[in-house]
Every structure is written in structure tokens, then in C-alpha cells.
Length: 469
Image 1: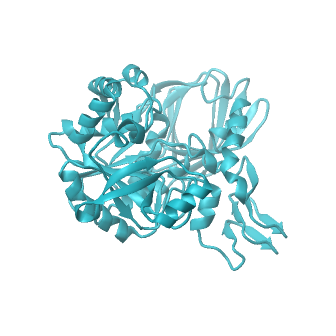
Image 2: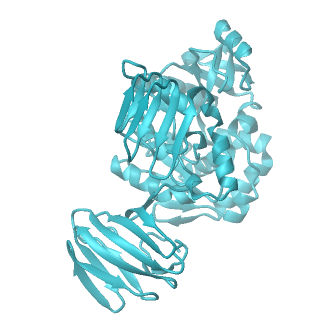
Image 3: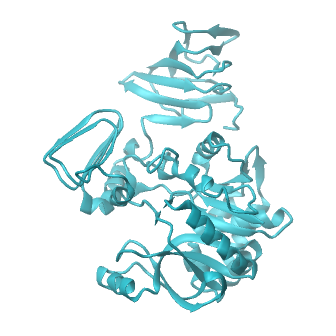
């Protein structure tokens, strides 16, 4: 059996302002109508002998993963939650321990949640061809057939050819300068390192214990302390945080004698920057990539994304313009690798735009902060059918709810009431309250908060169906 493992722990800072820490690029629809993690799961359909995917993500993204997989009817084996980022070697170890514990020793197919692959059929063919090598105890990495001298990827040098189209790994190479990348391309024996892998769970654990015994010991101990919480698997926080951070490449793949590489030519991209998104996207006759309400006049070679407002350009070339409801990025397309520096400076200033969009997803639905002032805040709240906010109270703010559409079941102190369109209720400071959508359509309402402190941490939860403390 093949156990897919989808790694969903990145934050995609080079795609700011669309990608943010609490809503990173793997949960965005950047290339197709589906989000990137949805496309990652969907492209597995057609590979034989697959178990349900296992997803590894951090605590903050758990409900995003669950909801987006529900939207595409993808049943998951489990969602393993990392207390903090410790890179790929420890994360994959958690997946391997989970697989072995279930009583078999499946072949793990490790995939990143934020890659694009345009030729899904070829992807499936190459993955299937690699299975015999993994079953034989080889540690397979998938190398992308290079079509340009790319300096943003590591490379894998092909060695002796083996069965099923695989090659021994002669060497792993760091990201090269452009002259060396051109040499690699001309020689034709160098592949881009994709970050996708295939191996038996027991083989990975054995090699990890051999080369990185401290990682193996800490992760094993953290896994022993696991707690199942509905769809989520939480591991021991103290032991996990004590685990060294390392990638699978440095920890295992560059040290093992069992590494093999299988070439893949399936239209792969890691969509790691705005320029790479421009490269893989459809363009108009002037070479512009356009999303949203955009009017480009005498403009060419641009990537322009309008999220909430209209964007008009006149006589500009090779720009990246990305508009969201809180931030606007304007950058030279050749310099977008440095967007991460903008994020770093915003983070140093404590700006919330690094973490949050104005629209925030919750397990029960979402809210959009429409306006805010010194002692007030206005939100547009959407509660999905069957969704319920926690039973809670606030010490510093009162709330006024006005139903726009749908039906609201409201707990307000000792009273439970039903509100429909154009009806409202007032929640005084310190009153225990809850909001639920008992209907079949989304509930939409406007919430007006007023008080001396309006932070999201002013909340005491008494009951929550989603396991939040």
C-alpha cells in the first residue's frame, strides 16, 4: 500500500500579501480554481493501492486543512499537528511512526502541499514507476527535468541507471550561481530537487536513527505522548520542541547509500515567488497575467491581481501589482525574490498584515473586519450551516448582532432566541452568549463591537464543539 503524506507547514512569505502566516499559499487558489493543497490531494486520484492521505500541518492551520479537504470530499487518514516548525526530517518521522503503528509498513509518498503540476497523468505514471524501487528498500527522490538554468533550486546529479527508470544519486548540489546552472543544464545529468520522496516507513526511520539519532529519539518520544482529538493528532509538545530542526535532505538523503532519483517531466513548479507564478499562468496578448477587476492600458509583462478594488495601469512593464483589502504590493518582477525582506521588516514593526488577512477563517465559517476605530469594530460574519461559535463571554466589549440573511440561533444570557433577516440582538459586556446556524444556507450577520479593548484574546470559552480552549 502507498501512504500519501502531504506536508502543509510552510508560510510562503515570498507571496505576500496574498500568502500570510495564518493563511499561507497552500490554502490559496493561485493556479487553478482549487487551492494548492486541494490540487495536491486531487492529483493522487488514479494512483493504484493508495491509502487515505495523511496531512502534517501546524496548530493554527488545522481547521483550514480539515475544511478544504471536506470541500473536495477527500477522506484523510489523520491530520498530525506540529507544535512548532522543525523542518521536514522530524515531520516525516511523525508520518512514518504513524504508518508503522497502524500495523503495516507502507511505502510513504511524501509531497509538498504547495507545488503545481500541470501534467497530472505523467506525474501519476512516474510515481507508479518508482514504487518497485521503494519496495526494494531504496529511498527515492523525484528530480525535475530542468528546462532552464534555474538558480533558485538545488540540483541532483544522476549516477548509474537502475531499474524502472531510476538512477543512483551521484551527488546533491546546492543552489548554483547562474554560470554553474548553465553548465548543469548543458550536461543534461542534473535534475532540480523537487522535495518529493518515496520510501518505506521503516526504511526512513532506520536511516534517520542511524544518521540523526537525536531527532529520532526526540520525535519517537513526542509521538509516544500523542493525543487524538477528533481528526487531529497532537504529539508531545515538550519533546517535539526539544527536537533539532533539520531537512530530510541534510539529515538523511545526502548521507544514505540507498538514495535513488527518478526523473519527472510533468510541468512542475514550486510557485515560490510572484515571478514563478507569472511564468506558469496564462497571459493576455501583451504578456500580462490578470486576476480580478483590472484595466491594463499600454502595459505589458505584468502580473496584476485585484482582490477587492479595481486596478488600472498605464504604460508600465514587468511589474507585480497585488492588491488585498489591507495591503498593496508594487514590485519590479525581477526583484520579487526580495519580498521576504518586506515581510521581515513588517514583522519587526509588529504589523498584523504579516499574519492576518482582513478576512479570517474559523472552523464555523469566517469573518471580515469591515471597519475599526478607537472604541469600535465592525465585522461581517458568515456561519456555515451547522456551524456554531463557542459559548463565551467578553470582559471589555459589548456586541450588537444584525442578521443579514439566514437564520441565527442565539444564546443571550439565560435566553435562547431565533433571529431572521433584519432582526437583531444586543450582548452586554460580561454576558454569556453563543451563535449557531441551524439552517441549510449560510448565516450572514453584521457584528458591531464597542468597548475599551477589542482584541481577539478577550474571550472566555465555556463550551466549544471544535476543541478550542
